[in-house]
Image 1: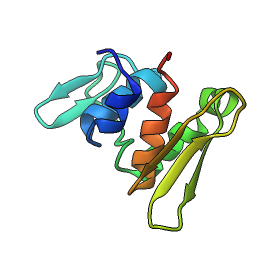
Image 2 (image 1 turned 135 degrees about the vertical axis):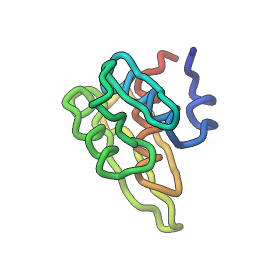
Image 3 (image 1 turned 90 degrees about the vertical axis):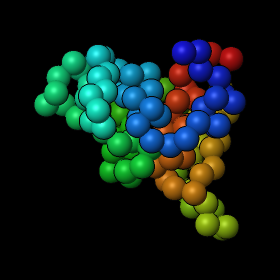
Image 4 (image 1 turned 180 degrees about the vertical axis):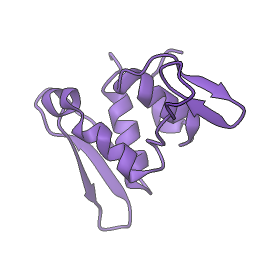
Length: 116
């Protein structure tokens, strides 16, 4: 699937987004969906993290060395009840607002993988 900024911003948070973050951002291989369960690395003992809905899993994305060294994503609350995740390194212009912090992080991280 070719990913565009518009597709990233329009997609629903959930398991499909989690799979894209795992594969494109975190480098996981072999994403498997068995019924309602999702796995990574072709291993049924390795559950797909819920990056887009769980702040603990999303925080692993922000702390990933390649994200810290390349883009430096930062997260902040806004004054109107939303969360903003944005890039801080020169040359990157990523800003995503969402109702949840995990969703904002996931979308911003996916935007780092798009060559536009």
